[in-house]
Length: 272
Image (cartoon, rainbow, N blue to C red):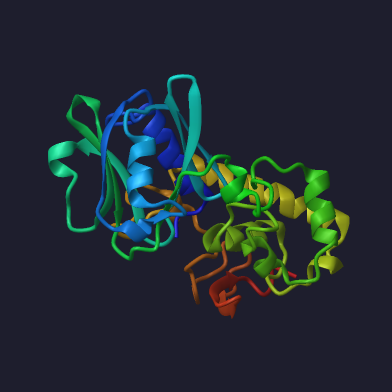
């Protein structure tokens, strides 16, 4: 599943183009909903009517959600997209948009289209009145939360660190890859109970989360397969996916366990 760096990279690409046409400023001339369940909380006809004729005024992100701000006249309305496991968004020629796994296609001016490609059909598109109607339940964005709030939220929890970092109610945007990498940078074991972490170690974790996420963004995220191509952060992994390989710090083998039903990679020597 794309995590914060991958979603941020997609948002920047949609805003700026980066080798493809930019979405920002485009007019939506029509919408084709090819898999109705992809649109959540609104009938397809109502969704199409609300979106048609709108301009893309801004593209942003909160947590793992993309936010496309639409404007018609003086009225702005957020459209949120969650990619889930296999979602991809591309701006391309309208003639090339209707592929096998295209679920929603926004036809744009200039002969272009925004295609939501989603092989596993888990992705969702929302058109709420207010952003908080969709994301009000999640925690602070992992790059927006301050150190003091992070420490306080950590003190109030009783779970283990790996599970906590994956909990989008705690902080939003961190997933499996960046949780493992953050815990290694901070020298903290994934099964360490959150309430036992001393303040200096908690600050180290806060700094590690931010550093890893910023490095991930700088590398355009991490790529593994066709779902999210173009990223390079996988070349910088220190623990994730490196089971039985030598730790980059101490040389001992990286171990793998399962925490919160997710593969978890760590060094038993360097992480306490």
